[in-house]
Amino acid sequence: MTKRYRHLNFFQHECHLEVRVPRVRLPDGGIRQVEPDWSGRLAGFTLLFEALIMTLCRK
Image 1 (cartoon, rainbow, N blue to C red):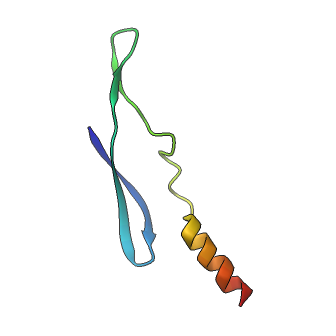
Image 2: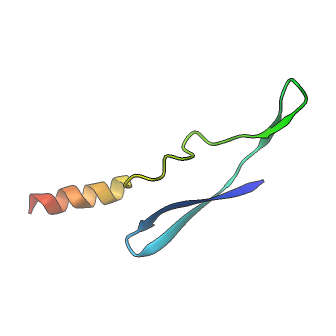
Image 3: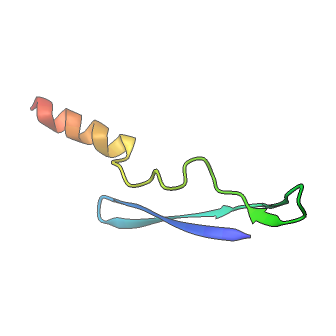
């Protein structure tokens, strides 16, 4: 199954991540979709943006 995550804009461009997320069968017979480790952590600044800000701060 493919999930779509909204990331921060990359300057003026919208950024979306489309990832294939597997479903797994649990020992009790249920099925659950795996959540990526980074899910929910996309609300901060990107490293590239942070690097840009640090460069601008030096000037």
